Image (cartoon, rainbow, N blue to C red; front, side, top):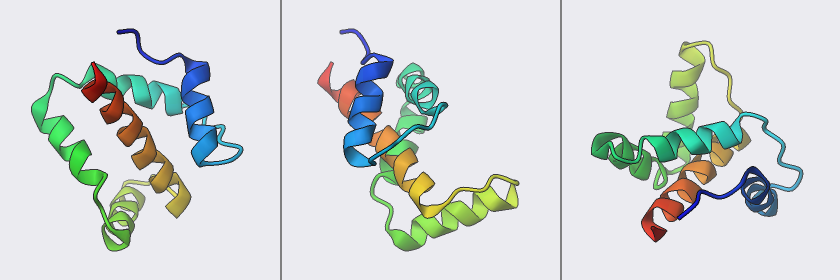
Length: 92
């Protein structure tokens, strides 16, 4: 099965987040797909999809300590990318 095109990916993300335009998001999506053979990474990513608000805040703080600033919306969008990738992987 072929991976979703960039256009399909951005259309999906735009339905969840109106005006979604993160230029690096599709590359993140493809990177997740490329690592789908690594059970440890996939388990970690799957766990992220179940995070509550407090866990997402802790993740933002950990990123900030590394000099990476994410807004709450960025974290939600990143997790949506993970969910989309996992859904695709499970469909093949």
